Image (tube, rainbow, N blue to C red; front, side):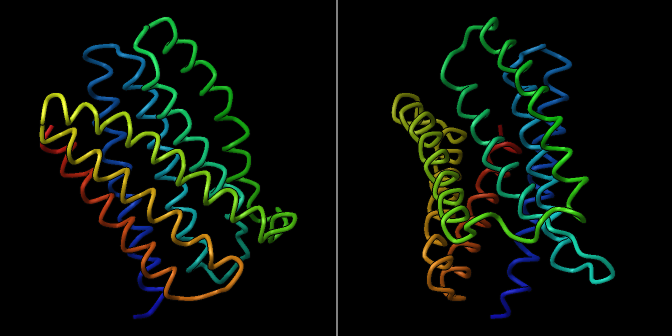
Length: 209
């Protein structure tokens, strides 16, 4: 299987699913004014932008786009805010968390806009990429542990699909860690397919919810 094709499918799927969830979250936020929904909407918007940046970085040849900085850091930060939004339900806590998220959004957007002039690699790229990929996997598994008990208590379709989504995302991020030390298309294929399945599960959960 052509790795560039799989990567493009992942980028397009990530963009479409993230954008849909972001739009749905903002629509619901306007109706109920829940800061948690706004946090989710902002996080998924950033993740959608990382997908678009990744697609551009892989396919635009007329200029150099060093998008890894924005992609790795943007996704990691977005998952952190999703996780933190699940820790407590207090609207005061969520409102403060949302304020911090808006502040963090500024340097993230700067990373995206500065991609043509950023260094092509992280300092000590193997270690940095391995840690960031692993961190995304760990955060997603923590999010899974918030949704799975909800499924065990209520046995709802939404909590089951969201549990499956973040479990697959976690596996997808963790399984690709060895490729930074021992490059292999096999790790990429397995990780990308797992993440695509996770995103489809998330989309079905949101559409059905």
